[in-house]
Image: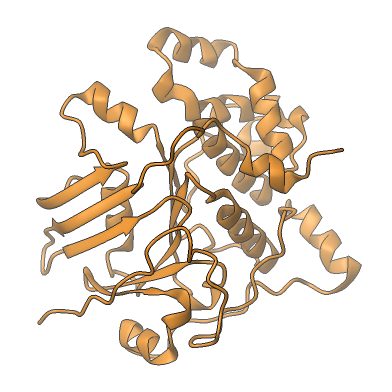
Length: 323
């Protein structure tokens, strides 16, 4: 029986073994800024299998929070723990910890001049020594492993030798996700990955990221649009560097979102597929993803929603804004 793409994506990587009790823990995080703290006493926990959305207006501190979560930025106060362990003091130990953290940036951070295979192998550099890393630039390595992750994302392995610059926008998105699969992280971070995408591609990418966050992995994804919350377990609301709330997705209502954004929150139905064959054909030509699961329906604040994470992690707690 042929394995479905859903099964193969969930089986991707080698994150076997006992799952950690907590994938990410931030406690009392403070990052100073010019006029006000970029982050002010922010605390959160992510358990294996949790899919957590991070909401907030522009300038709220979402990108700063993700930079602290992946170790690119050290807070001036507070505690960071990955899988229950604080950041290592040695550079080598820190690199090993960060190798289990995969980040999907809005600009993807692919190297356009290099081949798809070389970009995929960038996910393994933390596990390779310098000789193997340099050899990969001259003779791309582990071709079968790279071909396997492309197949999991419905990309033709013939693309391995193509430069990233020759790919469509949809193909680049999938190559960036394939790089994460090569890395095999426990913690998945995404910094507004749906911004500037057409409706079909945004819906398919979101469905895939939610699918990847099966135990022992956890997902923290920054969103600008609260109408895309369906499929998440919890929602964090960040405003002016402070955590305004941490609630199950079903407890997020219109009043809470208005308090977060200071006005009606930005919305647009980007999860609705184009009707008919013409729309599907247009999505394929644009390099759109083929989702393994149906894209989530647009989220309606306060509506009754399933609780997919009820057995995977905490249900969240309110955090009242100080001052």
